[in-house]
Structures are given as C-alpha cells and as structure tokens.
Amino acid sequence: MAEPRLPDVYGPGTFTDRHFVSVPADAHRILRVLAAQTPGFSNDESALSKVSFEGDDDPVIPGPVKSTPVAAALHAMTGILADEILTLRGLPNPNRKVVINTTHTALWLGSVAAVYLDHQPVISLLRDKKKFDSLVPDWQQRGLGPRSNPLLKLRATAIYPTKAPGQWYCLHGSLNPEPMLRNLGIDPFPEQPPITTLAEAAAYLRNATTTMSPAEIEYANLSAGHCGTICHTPASWSNTTMGKSLANHPLIDILPNPPHSTPLPPIRFPPVDATRPLPLQGIKVLELARIIAAPVASSILSSLGAEVIKVNAEHLPDMSILQLTLTAGKTTTCLDLRDPADLAQFQGLLGEADIFIQGFRPGVLDKFGLSQDDILTMAVRRNRGRPGWQQVADCASGVAYVMGRAYDLPHGEPVLPSLPVSDMTWGSWVVRGSLVGVDMFLLREEIGLYSREVVERCQERFRWGRMRGENHVLELLRTTWEGWEVWGKGLSILRPVVRFEGMGVGEEGRPGWRSAGVPYGFWDKGEVRFEGR
Image 1 (cartoon, one colour):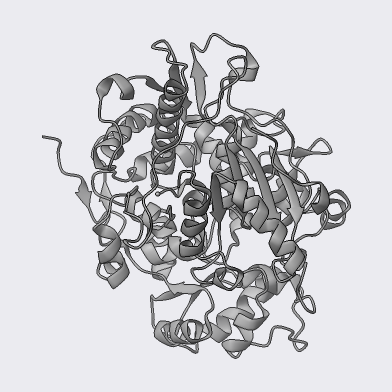
Image 2 (cartoon, rainbow, N blue to C red):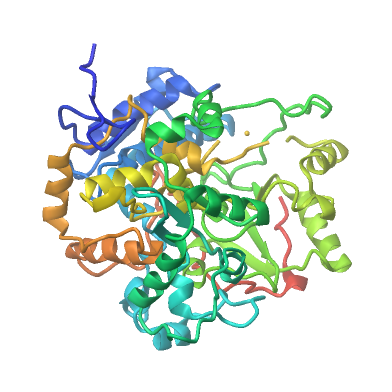
C-alpha cells in the first residue's frame, strides 16, 4: 500500500506527495484512477494500455496543483473513446495508439494565449491596446452601456481582503462589472481621486471590501444574482453543502435522464470516409455559449471531425482574445433568439444537430423553448438518438488558497491559478460540467499536490513573475506565457492534444481543425446550415 500523503502542507485539507513522480508517470496513474471511478468507462487494460504518455518529467505550470497530469489523463480518456468510436464505425485497428504529450497538455491549458497574430504572441499584444484593437475587433463591449474605467474593470475580477482578518473574497465583475459594483455600494465611475493605475484601482476596491465581512459581500451578491465567492480552504469548502454533495460523485458521472422522458434507442453513426477517418466525422454540433468552458468542449469535438456551428447574439459580449483560438474549425454566426425569425432558424439547426452545447445558467433558455425537457421532446419527435466562472470555482473550492500558500503570501492571501484549468477540463451525459467538481478532484488525497521543492524547481526553471490575489486571470496567463517563451517563438496555434499513431493514413487522419479562428458572427446567418450527411 502506498505511503499516505503529507497532510496540511499547504493548509487544512491539503495532501502533498512524499516522493516525486514524473508528470507522464503520474498521468498514467491518474488515468487508471479516473477509469475505475467513471461509470461505463472501460477498465480493460487492453484499452488503457493503448495510451502512452510522454513529455517533461517536471511540471511546467506554477504552483503545486497537478493540473497537467489530470488534464492529460482526461485527454487520454477522450482518445480511448475516439478509438472505440472508430471501431464501432467499422475501422477497428489493434495497432492504433493514443499518444498524449503532457508538456503539450500544459501549453493547451493556456492555449488562448498560445497564438501568434501579426508575428507577435497575442498575449504580449495586450500591452499595446491600440495595436491589439487594430488587429482584433472588440467583441467584449457589445451590448454594454457606458464603458467603465478599464483599469477598474480589470481589477473588479480579483481577490480582496475583507473586514475579517485573514478572510478573503473573490469579486467577479463578469463582462460588465458596473451592476456588481453598484450593488456593493462601490461607484463604478469614480472621479475623485481619479484612477490612473492598476494599483490605484486595486486600492479603491480594497478600501471598500475591507469595510464588509465575507458574509455581507456574499449575501449582497447572492441576493442580486451576481458572481463571487468567499475564498475557502479545501477543508472548509469540503464542509459546505455543495462541497459535501459534489464529494458524493465521481469527476465524470452518468445520470439517467428524467423519469418522464421517453427512452430512445442508439442510432448508427453515418458512414466514415476511410481517407480521413476521424471518429466524429459527420456528427453535427450546435454551440450556444460564450467565454471558455463550453466553447472548449465543442472545439475538442471539432478537432475530432465534428461539424460545429457556433451561434451568438449580436447584443451579448464575449472576450475578444478567445475568438482567435476557440472558433477554430467552427462556423460562427449571430442569431438573436428574441427575434421570432432568428429563433425559428436556430430551432431548425437544433433539429438537425446531434449534440447541443449551451453555456447558460439553468432556466435562462426555457423562455425560448430550449429547456432540457424541450430538447428531450424534440429528440423523441425526430426519433433519433439522445454562469459559473472559473475564478469563482477556484476560490470556492480552495484551489486559490493552496496557490497562495505555495507562494508564501501573507495573511492567507489566495491567488488564482495562472491558467484556466477548470474551464479547460470540465467534463461530465443530459451532460453538465462542474468547474468546482474539477477543482475538488485536483485536491483529492489520491491525486496529491507537488512538494514545495518541486514547485521551487519549476519556478527556478521558468522564473515567473510575482503573482498576487489582485491579478486578473489574463495577467496571470501573461506571466505564465512569458516564462514559457524560453521554448522559442514559432507557435501559431496549438494542435489538439490527442494524437493517434498507427492509423495508416497521413495528416488528414489526425485530429485537427480544418479552418482557422474567425471573428464573432463571421458568417451571414442566411448562409449558415449543416452540411448534408
């Protein structure tokens, strides 16, 4: 039996490895942990042994959380399922192997920054707003009222101290912080004194949060429906109602559809082109989502051959930088579901889709006839097969607390992970993704945390700049990227992580995207339709 991990090195409820295991070897172990815990997933060693892991022995992401081996194991599960689907589609191949490079996986977690534009890393272009705006249209401000101070807007999503000593709160301004700030009694357009630096913006917000207890801020946000969370330790989060509920489920769980829904038999996959044998070739996906988590899911499906149509509304903002990577391989258009004609067109697309991915809070789409029951009823009719934010999840679950302890910050100051790990790795069948569920899995005793020695060795290699609780996730991403630049400058957009070997075909048979990222709503809605089967 393995030695128990060291308790409480990074605070209450943390478990740290006694001995270092290389990232590829740890991914190999975690794949088997996940396979054993996931309902319906193969535990057959002949399937699991089709996967091989390669890459740097040491982690390449700041902090002790094992984001890379867990993400690599999840990609391996994707590869195993892809191999099984190819077999179901008449292309069995005992020589087909799934190869996962764990260093590639780490880069993939930061892939929204791993793109070059006009021969420059896009993350460095963020320092030159004028040039960035000249190259990338501003989707972020669509539908917003008067623009808030950009410095205050950036600092409105960050971690701040409260009136209670040593207790912190994660504010989240979403894409428009004005309502959240006003609700907390904070003027979003202060004139005296004027805010001219990020440090002044952070101080302005800190002066407000330190007049309130964590419970007061939480109640104000909860009452108004705004995002945010008290920053928990892993132990205190595990004792909350939600923490206890999530602990009763594996990371990936399969739950039955509602009892009143009509069971549907499985259907055959459409024929596959043997010259480009991607597992999801011919599968149609409709995406109605913004930001990262749901678009990443459809991006992975696209890389495996699925046809993806991404729909947004002209009046709803999105983050500009994300369009460069998370629209690759997709057709994008704008439809306003409040308009009867646009809603009818959307429902027509939905009627053809095999998979519908949406990223809105439960109940938001019900008024458009797009509730879970509506979708299940539509599936029966055609007789064919079946807000949450990363920062809030990181702070609630205790991940941000662990990162702050790893950096030896004073007064229990939490820090967000430098990469949007839970956004990039959520997974769960109807399918729901839990960002907090991913974070809780990362903190389980059976997964473990890297020791301080490993964290310091990684820091020495990449020399990342100082990270603090007030930093926005884009600043943390830029700091991480600047350390990664030691690998050179040749990257334009990352390949998918899953790689097949022994396919017997060329590049066309490898996961990848058939088109580059395109602007928000790039195609005219009158031209958007799924290709015929």
